[in-house]
Amino acid sequence: MPDHTSLSAEFMYRTQFGFDSIPPKPSREIVNSMAKIVFSIINGDGKITARERAWVKGYYASKGYAADVVDSIDTMEALPVEDIVALMAESILRFGANALLYDAIRAAHADRDYPYGEHATVNLVAAALGVSTKTVGLLEKLVEDEQAQLARRVALLFPLGHPNLCDRYRR
Image (cartoon, rainbow, N blue to C red; front, side, top):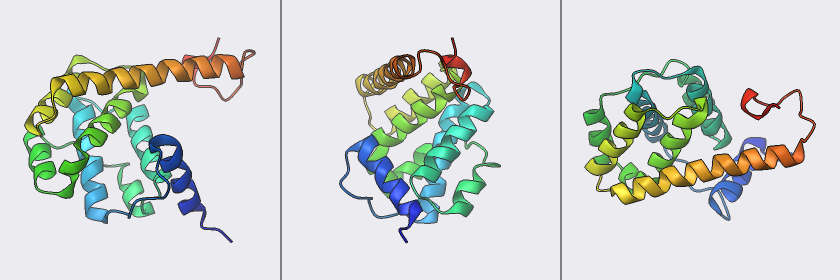
């Protein structure tokens, strides 16, 4: 019997990032730090919406992370920006700064809103990590393009609608 968690994670890494295999699983501490960083960035507007929290939880589950770590997302709180920068600078996470910023931008868009506070926090964290504003702009544009592509795909695949579609795709 195949390990469905690994099968799911392998599929996600292949289709999202072009990986041939699942990268080594990071420690619980690293995964927890990644989630805290994403939460802190999406809290740039002073709130974490239910859709943003659900996006982070689902994304981390799809990566095959431990259930207890995924479940901790239900009660996770944001950190101050200076703690995010210190957390990333002191760990292996600094090597994945662009990917974490990308994930945070995607999570921030989960509620169909990307307010100035979230954008400003992304830029603040990026600057502290040496990621240029040009790169941040390219990441934001990539997320916008991906959302537009998804809307086109949904419209083409379900021209009559579907009862399970999110409100944003209903006609």
